[in-house]
Amino acid sequence: MRVFSSIDELRHTLDALKRQGRTVGLVPTMGFLHAGHMELVSRARAENDIVVVSIFVNPLQFGPAEDLSKYPRDLERDAAMLRQAGVNFLFSPGVEDMYPRPMLAVVDVPDLGRELEGAVRPGHFAGVATVVCKLFNIVQPQSAYFGEKDYQQVVIIKRMVADLALPVRVISVPTVRDSDGLALSSRNVYLSEAERRAAVIVPQTLDEAERLVADGLTDPVELEAKLTAFLSREPLARPEVVAVRDASTLQPVASIAERVVVALFVRVGSTRLLDNRVVSDNRVVGDNRVIGSNRVVGGRSLPGKGVTR
Image (cartoon, rainbow, N blue to C red):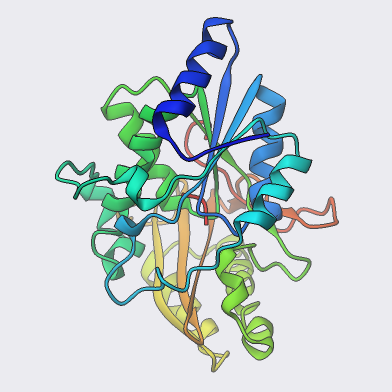
């Protein structure tokens, strides 16, 4: 595995390989890798000749009171994991490499980006779309891989790609979960032992949403209220977003009939946890993967066919 921080050097190397007819898959990450990231890598390896993984903690997507300075980083550990997984190139630029001067150009999908997580993190998704668009321009992959845990992020990136006619196929990969159902996330490292035990209320709430819809509940407002009450059973959990939205547009729905996403954005202690599930016609759509198990635990998929946190 070769490691690059220079945009020009990476481009030069990839251009030579593309002229040989090699296909390139990109896995954008912010590092501190876990099994969920490695599932993206595995999918990219299966579908491409060359796999590029980027590790860049993007300051544009962090608000002034958020965790940019303490976001977990361990490049040496990450590089060892990627090398063992057979990744060809690691692109690990510094802020000065990606943003040598203040960015005046911004990519935004505001109608999608101000919903759900964007409502409590203004500007976050403009930062995400900008860095992903820049990574697409640098690497110019045929395919790019994103985890479905960040459902809203993938919807936004897919819309950005469609609107800007970017020649990239966006592939979504099912959420990887720990044995108790908690979605893997780099931010889970922030949780204390007590908070980690409490965090299972998040996937349990999605299970409850599945049960309620399967029992015939069709009123999204009532479902949101019931899920908020369910979350309140855990004193360490503070819900910031509990929403039922159209799975494609992220807009409110009048009734749970077509595909809807149940989106949760919950603070456990000081850590924000994201999770979601898509349901349709009283059934869960898709699947989530559990570490060390072939068991399906709920699940979902994205509209169509498919920076990871």
